[in-house]
Amino acid sequence: MKPNIHPQYFDEAKVTCVCGNAFTTGATVPEIHVEVCNNCHPFFTGEMKYVDTLGRVDKFQKKQEVAKKLKETKVQKLAQKEERKRPDSLKDMFDLIKKQASS
Image (cartoon, rainbow, N blue to C red; front, side, top):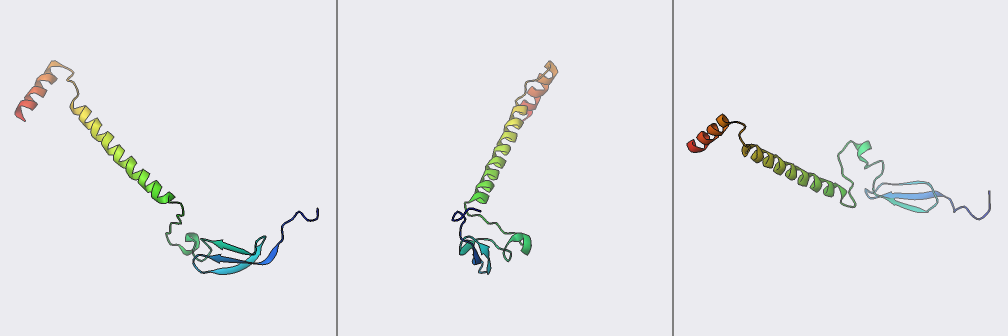
């Protein structure tokens, strides 16, 4: 190995989580701050928990709401289009006129 090119290694690097859990490990930095650890990670705790630092979950949910509204408007437009469908035959035209007159 070449001398003086490798970072300093700390055998007792302290890892601190947002939940308050702290433990030691080996690393190239003396202190590490994390947002999720084995005490608060949903995989280990079984709880549903969103870790959303950049607003990605909220952004995704807003996109889903917009898409749902857009789909509803498309369905409504298709229904209106079907209502305005031109009659195929003369009999259909007379039936349509009777429906409009009775309404």
